[in-house]
Structure formats: structure tokens, C-alpha cells
Amino acid sequence: MVDRIAMIEPQNDHLHIFSKFELPRLGSVLLATILRRSGKEATAYFMKAEDVLAHNIRADLVGISTITPTATSSYRIADTFRERRIPVVMGGPHATFLPEEALKHADYVIAGEGETALPRLVGALDGDGDLADVPGLSWVQNGALRQNPPAAPVGDLDALPFADFSLLDSGKGKGVTKGIVRSLLPMQTSRGCPFDCTFCSVTQMFGQRPRARSRQSVIEELSHYDPARRSPFFYDDNFILNRARTKDLLREMIARKLGFKWTTQVRADIAKDPELLDLMVEAGCFALYIGFESVNTEALKEMKKNISIEEMETAIGELRRRRIHVHGMFVLGFDSDTPKSVRSTVSFAISEKIDSAQFLILTPFPGTELYRSLESEGRILDHCWDTFDGHHVKFRPIGFSPWELQKAQIDAHARFYSPAQIAQRLARGRREGFIIGMYANALNRRWKRQESAYIRALKTARPSEKC
Image 1 (spheres, rainbow, N blue to C red):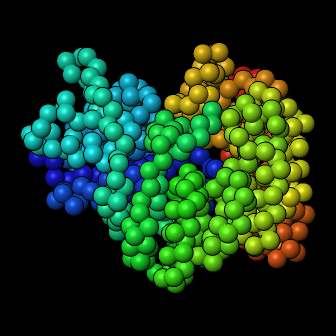
Image 2: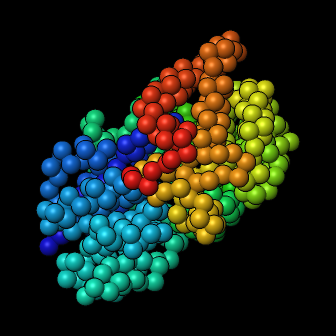
Image 3: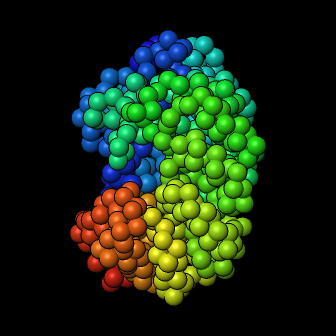
């Protein structure tokens, strides 16, 4: 019988922009919650591989959720448990898109959303049902690969339980990472995205038809937490996708006087609706993550972003006027990018007085249109998954050498987070921008020290296939 189940999400082993504020994705905790409700002894873990293995976890089944930069760690964890004759099931985006690779390290792979499939797999292992009836399941039987049809996306998100973070062990006691002031609270009010950016795997994982929780469901979950101790981060790919629904939710948060300070991700076209912005501020929004990506208009077309530079400028101005912290997300290295266009993108972020920013290297994640294109052209440098993290060059760009693109990314952070720029944010009264700037400046320098061997290899144009 499968009685004890450990759900594991490994943390990235490499230093990256969010290392200090690394958050678990919701999948492992939510699945542990579902299994616990079915009577199983389920626990979730979010920590580095070495810490997972040091815990001496005892389980009848181990579930591992992996994104591409944690695939290497996930495989190491899976191999260790299988050596102990404990079966392993893997899920998450990386395993979804490369199931045959994952099955070299796991007994089972579940593709896509796992809320229906994992309980069915556990039931089948307990003798209640058959593996052939588990949606999205891949496994090897008598030396042959078996793959079931994918599971339908969860239609009613309200039917899912609230993620129970008391089941999560992050290596520092129960719960999740602390933010600058309060503990961060990962939540999600919708899944799916109608847009289809070439470098994003969201639509392949969750579909292009957005699904949303009801206002009542979200409010009820929020009511379980203390706003003095928790700061929600809404994981939605675009929190304002359905503006009428979002306004209803915000009005209810205001009417209930919930008092949370929260943040989320949106697109730059949010500025088209001033009423929505005002409601967000009144409901407690203090910061927004916005994927501007680039000010190179050809790159915007290339990635199918469907956002103009004018819309970006308007959004930043409207948000600054409302004192909302703007975190700009930029991607460097599209085929139409050049050193000049990258410098222009950084200049834009500085001149528009964005509070904080990330300048990450275009990364071909499996499951994306970008990956398929670069793979077919033979332009991917290696498949060392642990460095598919936006901080390492993983393909041969057109407008740069690999080292030139890497240097452009390092210089972008150094310039945006220079001491002079950090001081200006403090002078403007942008305290959070100042604090993040101090952290990011130190992180950029520390990253270069830790990755010195990689940088030397890239400079000499001899990147190694050895991972």
C-alpha cells in the first residue's frame, strides 16, 4: 500500500536573481494537500537536493516536480530514492515535455496538470484501478514506452482545495520564504494564457483558454491568513486577464477590508484601465511584475509580444503616479537583438525610473516554440539543464557571440544597479527599489565569482558539453 508520499520540489543550485526570495510553485503543496485529504500521509519539501537527501525521507512513493533548471537536481534525487527501491513519479513542465528523458530516472511521469492524475496513480498502485486509466501517465512496461492520453485541464478550479502550507518543509521550518517585511504567500486565481510568446511554455502546460476561480473562493482562502504576517503573491500569468472579474474581486477585497499588501504579474496594457489601477491600489497592491521584454520593436514582433513601447511608457507613468513599485522583466538575445538594442533596453529602464528590473538571457526551454526552432537549427550549445536559468547563454545568438551576449547581460545588471542608480532610487523615496538594488548589485558581483569557470570557457569559445 502507498501510505506515505513525499512531494518534492528542488530549489535551483545556481545563484539567480530570485535566490533570496525563492518561492515554491503551488503544485507540490497542492498535490500533498489533495493526497492528505484522501487519507494519505503526504508532505511537501522545497529545498536544495543535498538538503532533501540529508532529510532521510521515508516514503512509499516520491513525487518530484521539476522545471528545466532543476531537472538535474530532480534526477539526482530520483536516482537516490530508486536505489532505495522507492518508486518515483515525476511531473512539472520539464518532465511533461521530455517524458522519455525523465523515465530514465523515474518509474512514472505525469504530463500537464496532476490534480486528477496523481490520486488515480496512487489508487492504481494500491490495486484500485489500472495504470492505463491514469490520464497523462507515461511509464515503461516490458521494455516498451506506454503513454496515456493527456488529462483534460481542471475545469472547475474552485473544486480544488486551498494549498495547505503547514505540509511544506522548506528547510527552515514550516511555511514559505520571508519577503522584505512579511512572509510571502503564493496563491493563484487563474490558469492559462491566451497569448503565445515564443519563449514561454505556459500555454503548452496550462492551455490558451484561461480558467479562473470564483471571487468567493479567492476571498475565502485569503481570510485564512493574517495580513500583518502574510503578503500574497498571485501566481497568475496575467492577473488582470478578465478585467471585469478582477474588478469584482478587488471590490470585494476592499469591502471586506482584508488589509493585505500584495503583488502579482500583469502586462503593460494594464494602463488602458485607470479604474482597475485605482482599485488595485485601494485593495493593497504595492508592486507589479511586468514583462516588458525589450524596446527593440523587431524583437517584440519576433517573440509575438503584441505590446508597444508607448504602452510600456504609459504603464510605467500611471503606476509611478500611484506609487506602485514596478519590477520590469526584460529578455536579451533575440535574433534581431544587437549590443546596441540591449543598451537601449537598459537605458529605457533607467530613464523611465523603473524601481527594479531583471535582464535575463533568452533561454530555450523544452516545450516552447523557441526550443523547437533552435534545436532544429542546431543552435543549442548544450543540454546541461541546471544552467537553463536565464543567467547562462544556452544557444548561439545571431547578433552576438555567446560571450558577447553573456557580457551584455552582466553589464545590464551592473549598469541598472550601479551605486549611482541605487542612490537615486533612495533619493526618490523608493525604499524597496533601494533595498533590492543593494541586493542585486552584490548578487551580480557574487554570480561572476561563482561562475568564473563558465565565463572563462565562454570567453575562449569552448563551452563544454560536460555538465
